[in-house]
Amino acid sequence: MHVFLTGGTGLIGSAVLTALLTDGHTVTALARSDAAAARLTAAGAAVRRGDLTDGRLLAAAASATDGFVHTASPGDASSAAADTTLLDAVLPALAGTGKPYVHTSGAWVLGDGVVDETTYLAPPELTAWRVPLDARVREAAATGVRSVVLAPGIVHAPGAGIATAVLRDGPRTAEGALVLPGSGDQHWTTVHAPDLGRLYALALAHAPAGSWYLGVSGHNPTVREIGAAASGADVVGSTPEETLGRLGLFGAALLLDQQATGSRARTELGWAPTGPTLLDELRDGAAALSR
Image 1 (cartoon, one colour):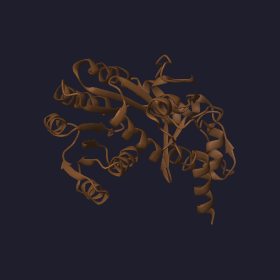
Image 2: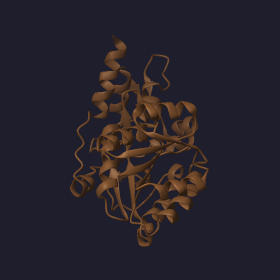
Image 3: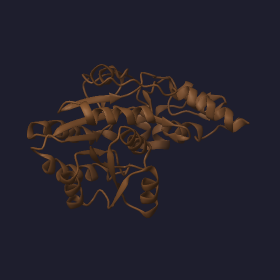
């Protein structure tokens, strides 16, 4: 299959690119800069220069390839507009073709609790914009698009991801203890990046039209456990107000207490995560830094 990929140099997208190439697909990846183009070429992808604001380019790419995988995101206030522009271009181009379109959402849209694909959506303000766009993707199945939504949990890889940015490199007390977002009793649902890349490849090949899957490994550690593993030091909690004051809407998302298994993807797509847990990965990284 010839696949068009956005976000191929990101944490998720680079893992997806590896998985697609391993499965024998040909990949053309969107690159906004010379540096991104060089990285994509080195990884084995063909490159199309452009960005997410170019609807004409995106529509042409969807028409010219056998499948489309979207993992890119500005990660700021323009994210909703960027995804809207992409869907405005890509979904009509794919209508009536039966080609796959795999869209990236996030597990945070499900809010607090033990969650799965049947849970009522209760997103924090940070990710509420995803809900109508995810619905639009799934509804495109009625127009002849094999559309799929994947909702990853906290994605991790050595030295990368939220756990590294927020916890290992987070603020410290005068005594050197790591300050956690919230009390630390909340759980985060997690997934190893290469495992997630494999899920995208399986969804591209096999997921039915209009389906959606959580991309989570079933490993749901507490933030206190994650912080201790990341820092190798003492940790202390903070109040919700302190977390919101320091991190804003992002902090509100980090306060979610969320657990999930990812069983639907295992049952329906044969997905089998094999990578290290977040805690093992962080402990190995902390041990390496101490040597």
